Image 1 (spheres, helix red, strand yellow):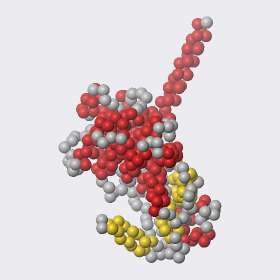
Image 2 (cartoon, one colour; image 1 turned 90 degrees about the horizontal axis):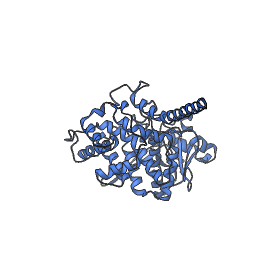
Image 3 (cartoon, one colour; image 1 turned 30 degrees about the horizontal axis):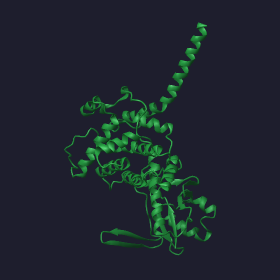
Image 4 (cartoon, helix red, strand yellow; image 1 turned 45 degrees about the vertical axis):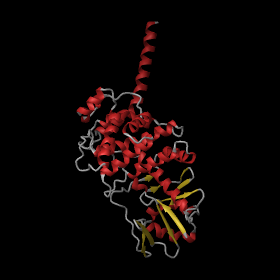
Length: 388
């Protein structure tokens, strides 16, 4: 039996390779002979069941294969597991590239992976096996009746490689293959983070916060608040202190102000606050937790979605798998200021929206410093010539 592995809620514009895995547009696989002519109609019947009826949509559907298999290979159970493990890393790299408060937005469900077995005679139908606590059940869907629609919470704008952090994914594949980063807790942290960033209405925000803070703990190699925060700070260290002139309304919070006066950074207070709130949720205090958090759950989820990929990059960089980019450094520099903003009280459509403005300043700062240094050197040189 043939199997087709594909990403129904993304598109792909060219061939990509990361480690042992290849992501290829369906049209390229077809023109390259990797989808043989005798399987073309069957493969297109499979893709058509996922809203890929138009030729232009089908052409850009990303197909996935491993070096050891073809696009229509009959995969073993272990190979299927390997494919889904790669999907977690791919989804994480997509989340890392995400920009907030812009019209381009993705979540981890954009990187949904479907592996569907088919025969030439019955392609377009499916046998869907669902888990039960006492085993499983199978639903048979006849040929031509399968219609899987993109969920409403998943955008139609995830384009590879545009919306993919390629350097991060290369680093993740190298680390996964060599296993020098204490890979099991690292990969478990990625799994928790990806699972907490679906935007699915079926998953509550307090459940997402539990998973995402757990991801910070796993990546820190700790099971308590102190160890989680210390591990985060060790890999998430700005080079300069934030400019207080640009702080937002959260900076006036009494608990945060007191902590800052005692020498704590905003990022340190933030993750500690998220950890305590997550613990309240985990112990059943969902509707009205007794702890008065500095940040709302929604704010925590946004800041965590921004910070965690940078945290993971810091860990990979320390292990020699990744080199932080100028944009990574700028984002780390901007975090404390971003954490003081009230991002859901303004107008995100305003081009000067505080979140985007804070990031822009951080990204421009290295250029401003270079220009300032060049200007200072020019003035000194002019002064020397005048004196002589």
